[in-house]
Image (tube, rainbow, N blue to C red; front, side, top):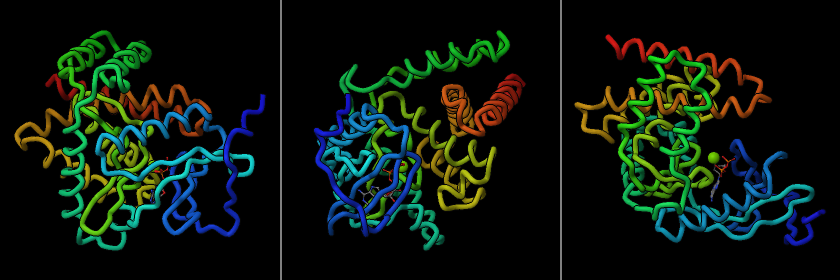
Length: 290
Ligand SMILES: Nc1ncnc2c1ncn2[C@@H]1O[C@H](COP(=O)(O)OP(=O)(O)O)[C@@H](O)[C@H]1O
Ligand SMILES: [Mg+2]
């Protein structure tokens, strides 16, 4: 059945394109409105889920754009959002590289603000439980000893109901004057903050080490990406525990990437990324023994 009729239809002919991410292309439709037009293959379910999570985040006080309705844009779907009077952090760093340290400090403050929001158990996906399930799926790829080590580390992560954004990178952070705001709420979940740091490690170190294009996607070079990663860990954690937290984050991040790529075999780099992640995790597990 064609369910498209129930949606308001809007046109984007002549509208300015203001951004792009992995799920959609964003157009300005009015002085203070935009529509995020989803790429082919993004299901209506996913779109509604993102809209609901964006609403939830806005109501809970996450500094984010106000979400409006799901609409039809020709043959595609979109979601209307408030247009933030802001620059994406990706563009900001490209234009003001000398403000990198200021930006990292502010982004860690924003991260801690998000992590200050407690979530009722069951309200959002629980990252630790998800990670257990992912680990079981990829268990055959590891020796028994390596699996036991990862399992022990995952067991030791505190059970927490902290709000996590879980895709905290330059393209999802907007800069409005002196303030930072977050967009793209699709991955919102709960858990210990080390799961957030795991996604930070993935965005700024693991993916760019596999393919420098991952840093280019964020508008920066591989060195700057590594700098943002390391400084974020330093500022977020007490400096004495950075190596330990980073090792945990690397293993948790690796599990997430391998599971994700395993479910997206159509992705042209899927098997290469899995191979690289497995290699890096195994190397780290060997180093941790010594
Ligand atoms: N509310 C907004 N105000 C201003 N720019 C936005 C807004 N939402 C998205 N953008 C721009 O569009 C880009 C892609 O949006 P995003 O929601 O992250 O899409 P995706 O889910 O595809 O990653 C962002 O990096 C940003 O530049
Ligand atoms: Mg995005």
